[in-house]
Image (cartoon, rainbow, N blue to C red; front, side, top):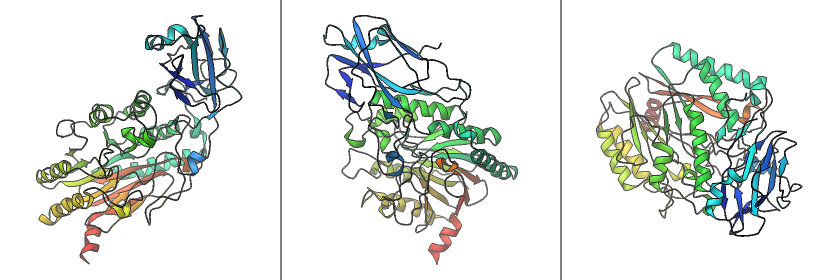
Length: 475
């Protein structure tokens, strides 16, 4: 039987009505994370000074969070079981009879205040003994995916297996031509407990095993950004470790939810903290100023300079957009692009308000597009292949500028059609079906102005060609 460590925080309890965390209770402490229990798992009380209660969350999913614009404050799609209320306290053990998620409340039997040192020693008070999953079962531990246990899940679906083979075959066919570079593109994964990220990474691994990617690019919003800094950091690290397991270079941009600001969350990350959490251990050989959240990377074999921009600042009056310092940096960066290199731009938020539902203005958006267009006009050898972004949770190729601006759909399984820019496309998504998944393989050819996008799951393959876009603008 495998032993796992618990983490707790003093001054917090779990509501008996909702299972939500409630702060301001000095006589309690509670676990912040969700733990997954299999039948036969146990919680054993080691210190009789305390007693504990359990909040149980079923593996059901509330469709509200998939088919409407809504976020769960717990960042969990597990459903609180009000029949197992966390107000029945135990003084010995608790045996789990079914698979579920849980959190734990603790209090002292003498009703005294609980301090931080007690919370820090939670594992000397309460022992968590998870029962191993049976063959074929999936499990998720507190800080991510447990690769020691088979994760078949969606892979049992024949349609998903067919999609894996089809995607890999397309990728292999392109790679056989030579001079083709393949990047996995993800955006808006919005990790939640009891979500579908575990399925997503399994499908990604299967495609990569058949036809390896050259790199991974995540366009932001790894989580919903509504929980404590401590918990959100663990979720981010879990997703990153899954991506690192592909053993490919990983490049990341910061999304608006990645600041941990959403729904007035007071535990926000500073820009310095965002750098250390999201970018400090990846973005290999990136060129940046200090710990700036924007940077570039030259891919010499591909003859491409990839520019990764920072497009959101919750401290600004106009939160979506680009700083003056970033625009000056981009101007200088474009001056040093090597001969014959092409430029690819990545961001989370789109640069123009007409392709952004959530605001009427993008701070310095027109200016930063103008910098890139001026670069193109300066010399016929200058080429911006395109600008690729997330955030809109929809597919769209905007062709009204000198280069295409491309929006990619949401990796998280999400199916609401409103709150989208004009002409953007969203897709029907069904849990357990191949349409549950949505991610893209970007193909860049060494000697071409065309970029191909192979879609896995919901949506269609697409392509864009800057030469065609420039010709349309000339007409």
